[in-house]
Image 1 (cartoon, rainbow, N blue to C red):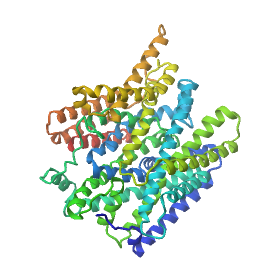
Image 2: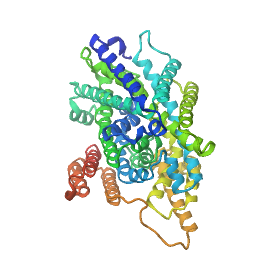
Image 3: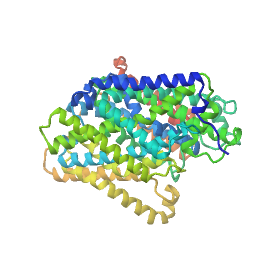
Image 4: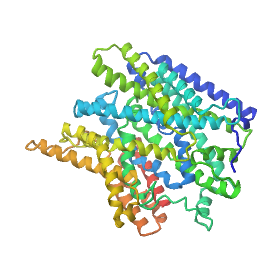
Length: 595
């Protein structure tokens, strides 16, 4: 039995009024901001003048689109709270971005991360990164159009405005293309800041309304319910090492590598930090986005777990697909007539576009700066670069529309978010290795970067084959890591291999050179201390899990120890350091409390 909820049809007059006003504000903000996009610096990097709050809104809007809101609640509904690792374990990567990579990138005054690799290594590394990041953007654009069209159909279900799958793809692509084509980064950031506010309100509203249901009784009640005789064991943060989707050994290894890619080496995320007006604004913006991300586990994923109970025992709904769970839940728990549904609908409409805006903006930057200006016309004028950037937006939209129409099944039952993560993970370990060693170790040889970037996909395929067709027959390996090798385990193994290969190549080719072990880019935050703390905390949590010990009682002491060791009380007014320590402490508390 399925819910017959129709969001648009359930809107009251006040909901429709709120919905209409917000859409007008979104359109108006984009049109107003587009007036400033008259130079390459303006079109691609918003004149490098974004304040911290604008950086935060843009970073969050780039990272948390409708596909992630829908996907996170859907996996909370189908798998459980363990999906929170996608949010909680992003925090260490955000700290790396703040204290290591932002100073390194902004010191170069670059437009793209391809340029950084080209300057640090050689032209080969620059070209390979350009090709890979454009490929990843296209893949994610296709996924964004798919999930966006699917949710657009649900939003307008049962009305004359309900689009078909193909129509939804065309609508989303056309709107996103127009805003980025005419407005550039100024328009993208203006829209993303409003969308971020709407998304946070929508996530918190749905989460509060779900958790406050009498049958749930809040987050504490959900934990008690999960531990009861009717418990589904969905509020556990850690799943066995042989779990096919979210093994605890995988999230403590490969997922950290994937987060490092997204937050520190990914063009369309880092470009927001490059556009900040100062290092401090870039750092505070990234940290603020990290705090906003914590709304996802506590209000969206936990609401998905609660939905599993509500659907089964209260509403008697069966056969709800994970990617559709949010909409069915919305129809059951959010009261109408107060403007909330109108606000949520407007937030959903905006969220469909947020990450697509960012990806198209970054794609146009890479195409114009790293391809056209670098290899076609070195002395190209600003107007020519703007034209190339805009034409690349049109071309990318066309390609993504065709691929989304052809390659995705709109009636799919799978978890879209995990599928997308798995499909793009083959390319990332080599890139993370190249960036990290390039920043951290002066002796890293230029040739080594190209080798590992090219080798990573080959290693990935080879390791999967080796495990699935040989090691899986060995009982010890099969019992530890399952019949099929989870992609997070594979990512970590490939990353370690890439680091080893880079080190060996560098030592061999630089044999006899004077040693220089200092960091390429110094950081005042003592990154070794942060890294050691995180690794020790994860190791301790893992030990407690393996030996089935109660980690809950360690939550507050662990958080206090982390805060005390990271904060510098002699520089208490150092806001970047204070909020970094606070954010990591909250994360460590969560990793223990929900163990």
